[in-house]
Figure (tube, rainbow, N blue to C red):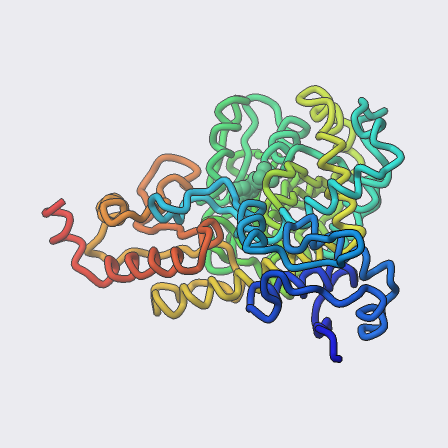
Length: 464
Ligand SMILES: Cc1ncc(COP(=O)(O)O)c(C=O)c1O
């Protein structure tokens, strides 16, 4: 008799997880139905050329995910009905599924990370150093965590050693720490004219002045940077060269070289925000690799693994490292060693690569949906991006569009919130494509946006 033998080719990550995923997929597509008995472990191991230990681990994992139930002497069975329900509960993110469709929060799709977390929690239970994870860490750090964080930056194209790394509670905390380390009240900080909104609150709080830099399709204009340096005597530049938010543009290598050169010539410290840099299959080297001696490179796992882990990875040049560590110590002592440990394990055991592969695939499908539904309005969308910047037709203002969209159950972020300084609002909006829990809801929301863009905003605004 032939046994159920899944095809594992093309599945990344450890073999046991590939087999667990294959079981989940077979249940989802109906090829394994409720109460079906899975093949005996020895036979499946032989058929797939795996060790019995690998198959045992996969079956245990499947049981943990609620897909199957094992009974001593009876074997392992697909769970009656429960599998889908348990999986759905496990994966359910803290996001609305019935309310308005939202394009506001720029978060990754909630995917398969919860499954990985269930496994990691279970593995952690058998760890010999659980007590140390609950303890205060000497110098606020665990060497292995710093090593894997450094290797993660290597994947983004930035050479780094564990010694150069400071871990934070996410990128936002990393940016705040960097500002605390390099700027004093009254200093001027340069940034793209359209920028990450919390930066404004940080500036306000620290008594910093901001100066906005003009951009073109390739990012910050070198001339604008040169002139601003002369005019303001600024000593810090904050920027997002890769998948800039809100515009989505990625600065070319030549432009990065130029910006690094100007920064060097004007003794600027650069704070490079690279939270989206893991997403493109191919990307220019980080700005930090052109000016490593003066760039504080900030990223986090919020967009690449899961926002709830709250782990930021900062690489700082030597002259700023102590101030940065002091700032972290003063603000929170250290990020939680437990989530740092989860992040470390995921980087080392292939889980992070697997989650990234899933995210790229999901975002590719979502970006394609946006192109199909929005047509030319999505022409600025990069091959892979979490967000899309849309210039509104003249008949709409961002306010009338936002109100009209809201009346049809769709929330959009207006361009104004990204303005570094109050001024003429760009008549544009940013659509974050990762937040919605299903492609169906995303498509529905995009269709409403497309219909509104095609309709006459001026007339509509007089009706609403
Ligand atoms: C451009 C940018 N930088 C930094 C952050 C902060 O990320 P984290 O969740 O790691 O604090 C975000 C989050 O939305 C972001 O969009």
